[in-house]
Amino acid sequence: MSLLQTIDIRRNYGNLAVLKGIDLTIKPGEVVSIVGASGAGKTTLLQILGTLDRPDAGELRIADQNVFALNDRQLAKFRNERIGFVFQFNNLLPEFTALENVCLPGFISGKDEGAVRQRATELLEKLSLQDRMKNLPSQLSGGEQQRVAVARALINQPAIVFADEPSGNLDSRNAEDLHQLFFQLRDELGQTFIIVTHNEALAALADRTVTIRDGLLFN
Ligand SMILES: Nc1ncnc2c1ncn2[C@@H]1O[C@H](COP(=O)(O)OP(=O)(O)O)[C@@H](O)[C@H]1O
Ligand SMILES: [Mg+2]
Image (cartoon, rainbow, N blue to C red; front, side, top):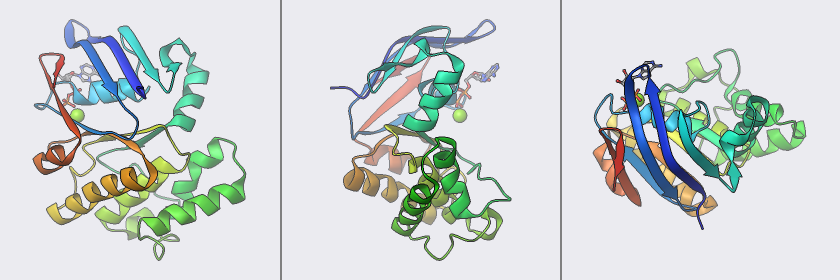
């Protein structure tokens, strides 16, 4: 059984062919790292897998949904409900507290506000942020900010979480802690992760590493 499957994904920018036929299958509960040189197309691929961008050709199935058959409105709903993101820079909203940032995707999905707050609180506790919930992002350390971003990614119980160089902006201690957190969440929640990384230690910890080179993926 696969959770995510791509068939011959292609993406060009003008006459630059960045993705030349990507075939990738991900099983539930896998932690897969994607590595490759700068400019190889890692972010381009992750944006497509995360449904933030559409390919020029090819198919993507996530949890039995043929996602690019959806129109933009349906796709936005699917993304909100089924996909979580962690970016290199946390992308937290600066005027909202940690708790509010975590709640937002839940509110957008139309879930009961009390239930969203309850789950956000539990997630923040699980990520050792129980004393930082009322703080603004600017009042948190880089490592804490990324843990808030992880909680936000998990609020709607996504099928899959995509992370694009999530520890790229952290010191080595915090990077290691963040990596341990991904595996803890996989073990405790069965959460599936696809992680683009430059960090060889994280890539080595993953269940599987795939390399993108010349527009193709290699195992
Ligand atoms: N929006 C865009 N328009 C034109 N070229 C782009 C765009 N985004 C990325 N590229 C180019 O596509 C290639 C792959 O970029 P990217 O996916 O960001 O690589 P990586 O994340 O592996 O460093 C690079 O040559 C980059 O310059
Ligand atoms: Mg990139």
